[in-house]
Length: 243
Image (tube, rainbow, N blue to C red; front, side, top):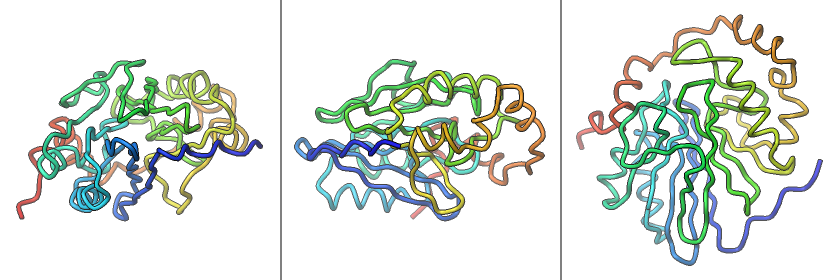
């Protein structure tokens, strides 16, 4: 195991949590220009996130979604109202509405910092992982969870594609890169590429063994999928709470 790269002095990082969906939202910013981005905001926490951005003196440039979530409604739409001028971003392959649609390789910048985008479908068609090489970190959405991965039995899921994308795009990153997922259900806040390559009980198996595991999870139907998916296709704009 190799020590992670320290964040640069002009890079702001804050990990936030939604207790209901066990979703992590990440606030990143350039401390010199004050431009900020939010990764995977949650509708019910949009006011919390907007207040934090304002208190810290940041300007929210983008609200990014790693994919079209099934377990919660994105906060992107409400954040655009709370913080005018911000824009929503999601992968073009997701089929969801947004101000900006990403293809693999399209960079996202805030201040002098740059997010590189990797298409990592398998959990959904539109899954993307966001890499910040200088800071040594990757935001994997539901593609790689800490000691797990996103399910592949609905919403265009494909276990073989997920396995291939993880091994060719995420597990080929430097092993000391911090790994930040979209969810964790046990209170673990971060991992590393090395840890998941070494200890992930699913993704360390052969491809065929992985497919067998994923095809036999027998998980319950997601509780909020019938509400979340239609709302997220519209970038969460029609389920904004009435104040």
